[in-house]
Length: 330
Length: 175
Image 1 (cartoon, each protein chain N blue to C red):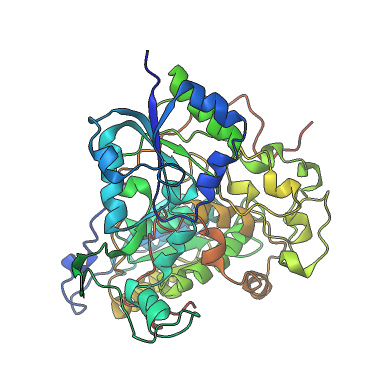
Image 2: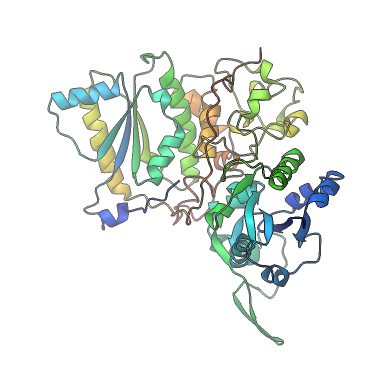
């Protein structure tokens, strides 16, 4: 029997998810023993035309990482969907929008102007080039992909069968997912292929988490010497473990950094950021409105903190426009 | 996450005749009872609030507020017992803490923080229910409809895993 074909593709992502596949290290040999990699532009020489030449559903599974924010990514998402039996959203960006999703705090125009004309970034742009779908060059006319107004999660543009969360997905979860696909032992479609329990549940520091509301002030990791044994929340550090799925073996926590929530919401949460806010806010140890306000003000960027990986998949989806304050934060 | 077309704008084509929609989460012991009192006292107030009874304002997850706004509310009113009067000792304080954080986040998301309002109204203050709903209706009428960007065609069908009854509560300490 021919080995099932799998593909990997990237959209708006940093490449970390591809790195996670490489991180399989010797486990990747087990993977290629049971599957054929039929498409992986990051690592192997496959072209879009190779995928177009495939029969519909020829790939057993395609793992797509990255959010969708351009016309080209939309096309590729459609193509991967058509050519594969299972489409797996791989990593936070395709699962819930990810870090690129925070671009939904700004308009497309504001982003392009900041990058190309305002000189806010170091890009040298003496000829004032500005992205455009139609470009004339001496060699001829070019039709280029366009940037979308908003960043979207993968399942906001195509039907997704499974989600592999994480930034990037933990190696253990990748191996389990591939094994499940090969052996045909998959959970119901639409499942997130990670344990449906919170980080706190099996956190090595859970014993030092106080029972009562206790946070008197929020601090950021660079401001204190972090106790390597004690619950981060008990130290005033914003740890999103209470609202975040488990499955990463507490990689950050064991590295003495609080959880930032990349594995996303538990299955019963409709909005990750709101669920995390609920969990964190109720731990603030004050009953006085003014004092509570002062403590909350210590969270420098609530939207960026609680929606770091999930703004497009949130109920709000993007910042309300037209922006009353010109697209600036706060 | 089904997308409700945001029809507030269509309903009240101009801000002039615009009837804001308020979702009001009232706690069972104080504010909901107060709204009952307002009713039996035959107080007249704006018909713009849809009241949802919750057992305690501490039950109010910020997710409820965001879902209400997504599904067409122009504002959300939260009513709970006065500080110190919570039937469950301190549920209203938890509500207060969540509210303070939520309104900061809403401001960042370009949503006027006045669209979410927290009021302490005891069971005997039927008149305060009338005032709060009237005031908020007026305020929202001035702000105009909330026009959230619509979510792109949703294919989200993430399934719920069955609740594992045998498991320990998520935040319980290990034995």
